[in-house]
Length: 196
Length: 196
DNA sequence: TGTCTAATTAGATAAACATCAAATAAAGGG
DNA sequence: CCCTTTATTTGATGTTTATCTAATTAGACA
Image (cartoon, each protein chain N blue to C red):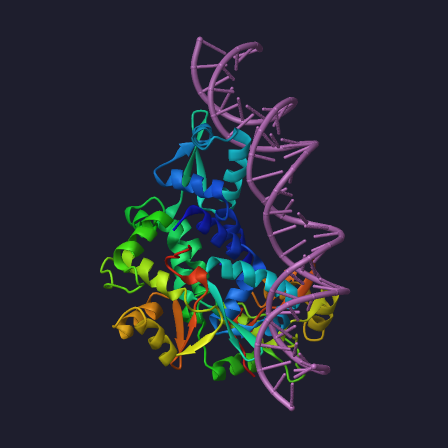
């Protein structure tokens, strides 16, 4: 957890309208119009607030037909809200172990990916594994829905153990699964981002 | 915990300088000049921030000779920071003493409301008072904005002491007030819900 | 393709906020 | 009672922010 993320998070929560939105989303996903109606505000105002909430990663959006539902990521909320309690402590910095420079990330990719773009093996060390998962997951397009076969087929182009990779993507929050259909999660939800 | 206290708290933490102050105070009490020196800021700036931190209760001051030491109240910090995780829960505001069956709630209404729909008196027992507040507040529509007079006029149809009822609705989080304009809060925020 | 509906962007306005220098206050010690 | 040290208040300045209306975009569906 970096300082500016903490600041951004508390700025986001430090607004009466956004706390009311969080309260609503705690009961379940809700779309913009309904939030606006419930709070007596206009749609652009809700967009404005939702953007701020999404920037912290505590809220994410899922489209269903014409309507975009906003979800509260309660795990993230809990993690971010309690970060201030861990600041300065041993294991606060420990979660910073995931921090790597782009250069270091590229080195991990060089070590685990062949010149033909195949994954040699899944790294066992968490932070290296996350770099690899991030590196390959960028193939998918934001907002697009993939079925399991499409995901598997793509994984097979670079690695045999497609089941493990697919499961890790979901577990580590790179992807979101519902009814065996997969979507890329917003970059804000990734634990590590391979930029390049 | 009231909504505006939560907002004030997160506003207070949502600033780089104040997080840095909190980090310093976690190691022990410190006086203003030293904080200013450590952070490369001027004394008035520190006063400005300390005032905000004190307003939330997470920081308090103790004088020793002519030096004032600022202390971090970590218990308070923990309580305030985790409040957002409990918001909207059944017993967020008070304890499970507030839990009542719909049948019990109806009995309270029968005891305090005449057959003409007038409130005989405001219950002094908290949980009964909340039932009554919930019962009458359902008159308002979600998302609609009311001015003070409209609220007062409605209350007068069932009770003389409109100021108390109006204040209680805001204090107990049934309603939300801003610039003397009132809105119903989302039902999720009510400490007790009279379902009808 | 055109027409819904829902969401976002753009631009404007008014309010809130972080910071500083200068002036003032509060308290202790000679 | 003056001097020194520390903290607060005042007032100014530039920045950020919450909200709105109007215009635009993005999908879904017929």
